[in-house]
Amino acid sequence: MSSSSSSELILELSSKSFDGYQYIYSHDSLTVDCKMKFGIYVPLVADKECVPLLIFLSGLMCTEQDFIIKSGIQRLASKYGFIVANPDTSPRSCNIEGDDDQSNFGEGAGYYIDAIESKWSKNYQMFSYVNDEFYELLIKNFNVDINRIGIFGHNMGGHGALISFFKCPAQYKSVSAFAPIYNVLKCEWSRNAFIKFFGQDEELWKEYDACELVASYDGPMPYAPILIDQGSNDQYKDNYLFPDKFIEACTNASFPIQLREQIGYEHDYFFIMTFLEDHFKYHKNEFEH
Amino acid sequence: MSSSSSSELILELSSKSFDGYQYIYSHDSLTVDCKMKFGIYVPLVADKECVPLLIFLSGLMCTEQDFIIKSGIQRLASKYGFIVANPDTSPRSCNIEGDDDQSNFGEGAGYYIDAIESKWSKNYQMFSYVNDEFYELLIKNFNVDINRIGIFGHNMGGHGALISFFKCPAQYKSVSAFAPIYNVLKCEWSRNAFIKFFGQDEELWKEYDACELVASYDGPMPYAPILIDQGSNDQYKDNYLFPDKFIEACTNASFPIQLREQIGYEHDYFFIMTFLEDHFKYHKNEFEH
Image (cartoon, rainbow over all chains, first blue to last red):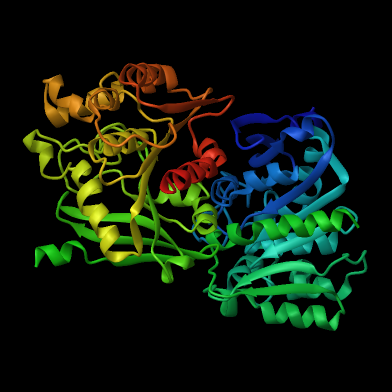
């Protein structure tokens, strides 16, 4: 009963865009114990054959709406023939005291981790939600080629994409990111959240830090260095994101990345939309090798 | 003093996107007697030469934000080397009783007309704002080729674009529209507004109805029939927009239009973004002839 209800999808939006449809669905999630919404663009070609899937993880304060409204994803998903799915960024309406007081913690700020502290652990299981329940739901309900699944994201969602790839290498053929939180252990936003989700023991936090995870990564290597775009005018770059720390960690681990500094660009969707097609090309190339 | 303050622009947003910048400016408008915001994308090529200008008029309930966030305009403005400017849809914060009670009247719903009734006539002068003050402000402050200026819009803004073209043929080389209110005299939304803006005399309303204006149009003819895209699944099509009335009026006036029914598309930005490049091509072709 509960298992089947978990994958029962309620259609919230269906709108034709380019050669496909932008949908929003909701479902009752067992993993985070609340109703969750997600966006998914399905190109018409998926009616006839299984197609690649990209999962996009959004950043702080986003819902399932931001990416589908602001990025221009529909044109590219149609052009490349990819399904593109984007989950919400946290559980919603769980009525936990303090879950909507701060923009960098709680609702809209789940950090794609599995919380341990009892106050949060019932709902804040976004790592398992994305990589188990949501992943399986997509494969079960849509015409996905399971050998061509990639993950990418922005800000908190770039962090989410990187840690999902490093922790679940069998599930993702490729990963890329836009201005991710490269080093959650150092970032004030995530430190404020992790102390609540995990308590004081920072060893537990390391399970979800891209810089830590790349050091112990032993999955398949990407064909081309993983693509990360970073705006040079990003106001958060030096004090919250810490690209230098990730470059250092990848260098030490001999893990190949291509971190492109995009001169003059900010941290916003105007930046993301500019380089989104390059990310499609990157994932497509990974799928072909 | 007042004349110069009218064109003093305050930069509210500057963000690099593709090969250019998306800006939002505000200024104190003399015409509508309040602070007005507008979006403008300026391609880098405009640093070196004067370029074409497209003015986009947004629909009901929009601000200057919707079009620049939801349409994907930046990629196309960059690719075609056009400046694209979009004003707000009404005066704001004028504190007129009843100006924010209804989604189809007042704030976010100025209908691009010049009101006559004294309660509204001080501020609701959106026709003159767009076609005089805003138009001149763009030419004065940006590197615009005045011989290549087009106007287009969506919903209420599609109506605004059509009436601007018909009433000011010397100003606009081209016009196109997405699912416009083709016949404001028949549409319940605009009838509710026009009775407040103009009073009961419907003869006064006709000054701003595209079906009426095409009948008396005596400006230059477009090189190619004016392009209008209309989603077949548009929920407002038959009861609020009335494409058939405009087709009839254009046929009677021997005025060339190409009204394309786009099968399966709705009334939203997912529809607009799909066909936006066709509109760039249409205007570009008009500019070249």
